Length: 247
Image (cartoon, rainbow, N blue to C red; front, side, top):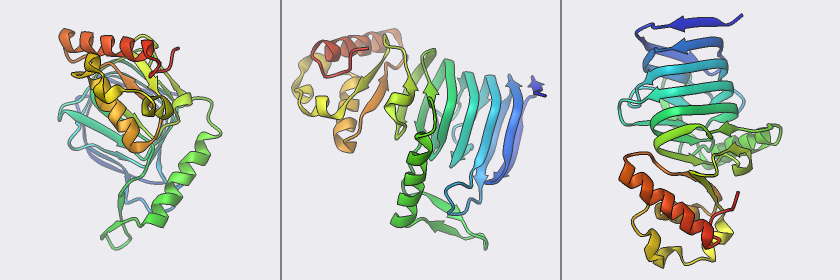
């Protein structure tokens, strides 16, 4: 049975341990402030807060106080999400059939673990070492081998959106406003000196592809009509020149 929570003004100051499951809940017009998932996670990769079979519609998630790291999301829908605090970062997370649709502010979605910290049994903050980080990232890679698709962003409109360390072939995207940059194609192109994309967000992400040496999905940001038009033109140019994948 699915619980429906509608027009509850605020969920605040809640912490969920890395073995807890939040499932079968529809949140509508709810606000989330200072919510910490995978609170006090240990260094076992499989131990993570699970969010399953949940819908978030017309909700507000505070980007400054909500910590979303080391999660497992399965069959979750985010629909029209406001993000005060300017940026919502969801990192170290395994996405399994997660849909983002409607309007969003600035979001960063990632599955990689980089410089992650956790709280040990004594309550002290510890940084994971390189071996531990590699263990986490190998675990994530193995999990994605058994997932049909990770993210569906086809119907999402983002003021800005960055996705990293999620296998690009597992991301469903809108071919009109969202494109796939492949490292080999960017490396062999003249993107740095291409005057036709100089002022675009797309050029920045060509640089990110080169720095990380990873393929990347980029999204035309809907900040305003002028910026959106610039990005759409840059996407068109990169496709015409064979830098971006044709869909």
